[in-house]
Length: 414
Figure 1 (cartoon, helix red, strand yellow):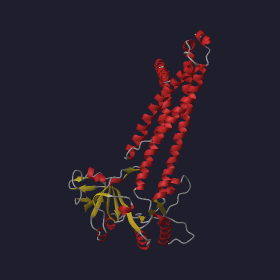
Figure 2 (cartoon, rainbow, N blue to C red; figure 1 turned 180 degrees about the vertical axis):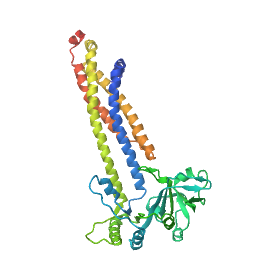
Figure 3 (cartoon, rainbow, N blue to C red; figure 1 turned 60 degrees about the vertical axis):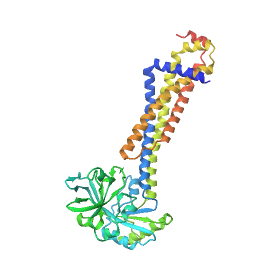
Figure 4 (cartoon, rainbow, N blue to C red; figure 1 turned 90 degrees about the vertical axis):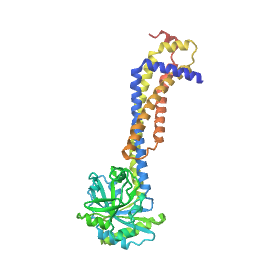
């Protein structure tokens, strides 16, 4: 059986070489469809890995209170946009003082500037640094860690010390090849002592998180005095089982801070890290569905193209079939010969499509999001299923037709 398959494979390869242009076009059609299928599934796998890693680092027992609910922004497609008032510092501070849920740690933060310039000695950065004002609870509540130095402590915040924590990109640029701890950098003329370096986070949805400079919140408020600054509140609960109760109590506390009566709608957003993660992952399912639709179209189009080329091949090789059958070849032998040829073409097209799809969709997306590339095994399995389906659908009819030819009539064919 193996010898027969090997012989049929040699015949199939010789036939493919004799019809190189026609076969190349068929391989291109199959490969293009597999490339689209694998590319989208691989890109989705990278996107899911990025989202999961970013939100998983925050844990499943955190939530934030901000001006808008990001998850509702994702779901909103049309309709009148609701404009919520900002969360001012007095409101954020009042919430922090009054929210006394057991084991809860509440942090306040705000984005002071998104395109600042930072200097060290005679060097300076491009004006692309994000300056954040935060307290000592911001890093753990946001899932951030320091690889060098330390976080803010209560003394730094209470005394408004001019200290700062820098993103990992500072060690690749402004503070390259030196120990950044205790170095003095300046922002808008104010001098800050570096006390910590954040662990590398990469980019999320185009946001470069490693170009951040975090300073004590009161110091930031004194240096950056833009009107209508919007503050964000992050809360971490020690016990995940108490998260639902903690969120409910936080909503009530913030409604009291906002002075909302019982019939008024909530005019702020509460985002739980676990629910936001589920929402974002559910959005990627649309891309998965699109990939499978492309796969179905691929099966249909590739099957027609491959079946046509095999029927033409049967017609052109009618005399060859007659000779083989007159020399004693069985129907199954002739059928296997043409089915093997169909399989070889499908495998070549599938291999080309898988390689291009993984390289362009997977590796390309991982470079864009700056994350490790997870091998999209689901995409590879989907491609193999597509290849097998194309082979079966396209190869059976031409193989049966070739096996059914009458040897006498076949030998007469010109």
